[in-house]
Amino acid sequence: MALTTAPSSTPRATGPVRTPADQRGSGRIWQREGLAGYVFLSPWLIGLMAITAVPMLLSLYLSFTNYDILTPWSEIEWVGLTNYKRMFTSDASYWHAVQVTLSFALIAVPLKLAAALGVALLLNRAWRGVGLFRGLFYLPSLLGGSVALAIVWVSMFNRDGAFNSFLSLFGIEGKPWVNDPEWALETLMVLAIWQFGAPMVIFLAGLKQVPTELYEAASVDGAGKVRQFLSVTLPMLSPVIFFNLVLETINGFQGFTSAFVLSNGTGGPVDSTLMYTLNLYIKGFVDLEMGYASAMAWVFLLAIAVITIVLFSTGRFWVHYSDGEGR
Image 1: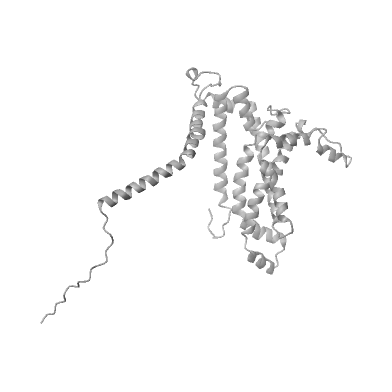
Image 2: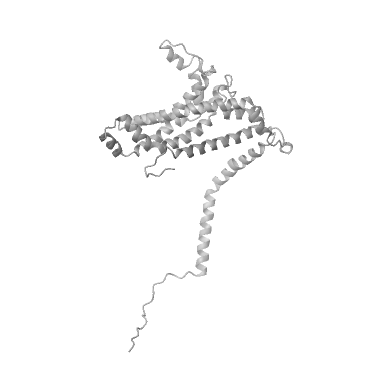
């Protein structure tokens, strides 16, 4: 005799049934939230388009013209690659500006990072009043590339400036540093190195993340302070060093204010401070060759992009991460 089981009368647990009206209401909520998001983003989007994207596209167009600011848009002449050809083949001041900028960046940036790391190591201790010293060392970076700071710097390194007065205490005869073609660029380098506060703070944050167990293990193995720095501190700080290197390299190539103030906008003395951006300014707003200046700006942008790509491509060989994953 076959037994049959009566179907259970207990209702199954099921989720709520979404009606078409509920789906339409949910869709309207998402639309309202999306619209609100775009409203809050609108100031940034307007600024991106009006201040960045549109001017960049216009400068790209102008780089193929002979635009000189005073010419009406209807009379702009298309010259193709003439500006780029002139830049690479017949403009001696262009290549001199490239040389000055490379010299500035290749010397000032490593020394600035070295100074920032050295001071960060000194301030990474629980000394009384260490917070005050951190603030004092960071203070020059707050001033940034201000005109007032550049004016003070020029006055310090003049013939009768404070630096020469300090040298006279030791019987050393000073020079008109800012007016000497052999030393004018070096004074700008010293100014850039002096403003090491921002990378110093980043180095301090990185040092706080280095586990003390690594130093203890290295000390047990007989490693001294120098060995600990080379084998523990530098590898653990390599991502922070890489970050600072990229930022400061880009900033180093973009130097303008101090060179402009020191030379009164001419790049002197004898073009010794003719930075790339200053030369671009002179071509566009002094010589009124805005088309040529636009071409210089785009070459500069591509050069910075190539340098950044090179830094990122080589970083995987020396940047180490705590999780063991490289770039």
